[in-house]
Image (cartoon, rainbow, N blue to C red):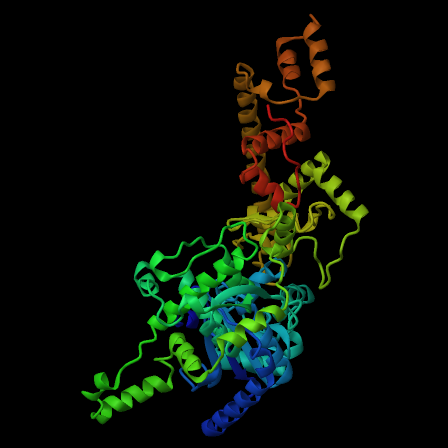
Length: 610
């Protein structure tokens, strides 16, 4: 398959491609000119969004890619987002915006997990769509998610699930039948929820904080706020060799520190704030007591200064003397020019030095600005309560959301939901729904709404599936057989063969059932001599009846044995065992809590500490 030949994508990177949905394959040069013009128009369209954004590692970038194999010429790029996954989803928003603005362009986006857009809507995907069958099927087109449908019959729109369409073939289907390829509303709603808030979310992801930094850093960041990202990363990923440059601060001496307001992304701020670090005594950085009101500003500034010093120590400036020995070779100079053109020597430390050299500032003026700084943002978002974490996990899991809008529960509704979650009846009902839900060799399916939707099934579909399993058909039984039978191809047999096979099958079934009953009877007899029955709770009415039967002298031995085998209180035993498992977990994650959590059932903490 084509995707097996695709170069591996780094774990923290996202790759994206923009194709013309209806290109002219006869004129490659015209195709390139059209794509280059579209590239210029795209950059002009999204420039207002990009200019205010701070990327974790690499920015969004597009360039022209010529045709290669069965992949048409297109615009594409790769962005490493590091620890800030919001960069990846901002790129998805950009692609949706681009395809909405430029209606003749379709976008493809994926990372090392593959089609991560489908992962976001996993609970709503059709059964046939999996990582193998989704290759070259998923596009962002006209601002919406499109999926090439599964073609099961000749003449239908789509592509067979057991083969991978070429990109050109997929684009042709998308162009000709865009309405049929539009993803179902629940799938699009799941993606819309993940992108909810953009572009305003860009500003919401920023965090402003006061920092005591050397004057040079304050000037650099006032002109290039985006350079704060590589500085934080340099400090965050430092090693002992990097810290050697921080023994004596040559670029940013600590005696020039000023208080300034700096803009971080929340990810960058968390990386800087949460790391404990003690500066070298030779560096000249000293911190006030922790009780000092400006302690945090001093600590943040100290860490940031180390990051900038490390960056500049890696700037890799080459002197003219080092280049003189080979500069006369035209092939070597052409090679260097090619590397520079492709950004090989691009170094954020060098960019910092360039900005610093071009800037002029007054230390006194910077100190005068300290009295007019805007207020800091609260960093309370760093602390998440268990309830808030639970809510975020539920939102990410998509439970309780069936459309594109999420209803904010009122206090009374929250109380009802909490009581329902703590109900033991809800526990038993949820477990029964889980047991009765569809399962296969790939795993068990969690019921979508265990508390609100009762389990139901189609008896005819079940009977038909059993007939195929026990009859002469060789069809494979899987979870798809319970939903639709579009792919079924029954084998034609005559009536005599059906009658003969039916009688033979009935006889076989009867023998199997008799053997099973004998086996169960023998097992019951063996268990009567053990204490295993005492570990289960029986129905009270059944227990009383058993006591009365035992006191009757006229009962035969076989009747006594029959009476001793009493029905169990399944619900009570289920709840008791679950509660015992939860108690043994001592508040930690475990099989019982994970299963109940996946079913949307919440059990309060164990108040009995004995």
